[in-house]
Image (tube, rainbow, N blue to C red; front, side):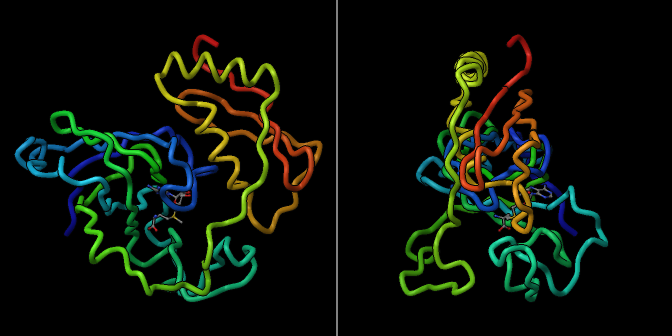
Length: 229
Ligand code: SAM
């Protein structure tokens, strides 16, 4: 039986547009907050000597029965099926995820991390230090995901750029970089063609981000409305 030892606070209020792996959006900052009875700084002693950590977490926003033995990973265009254990799909028999993230600082029982791919409120079941001499395998390969996914171009309308600056000051976060890095991953389903007349949207922090496609490889962010902007 696993019990959450911490909870993740992240900008991602919904699953749509979360990067599909950690570090694809380095501007995605989060806080991992230890939960009782583990919320004692003693549990983190020594961790300040580590640049990156592994987070093991529960895909809590996937239904318990929502898994199958073969899945359609976005890397294969979203149409081709392969075995679930050959993928990092969220739809797996035990809904456990693992992500390596940068540990920026520790304050008390809070870990400030960046490069997260976790939904806000994700229960963390373990934290482990990244150990380069074992975890970075020089001879490793993965023929399904050989290179990082290709990106689309992201530009901002004048209004959206102004709004991003205001939100950045208010939240003390680089909002423009976060939006740019998340949308560059082209969050719409891989099998879907962009509809030129359609507006897409997602909530990051408390900001409603709206964008449309100028063409298949170019997104324009048109509005970032939210508290006080
Ligand atoms: N790096 C992890 C891994 O390999 O196990 C997660 C990879 S998974 C493909 C990443 C996606 O999981 C994100 O794009 C997001 O949509 C989804 N996700 C993140 N946190 C989640 C949660 N708590 N519950 C359900 N889905 C989540």
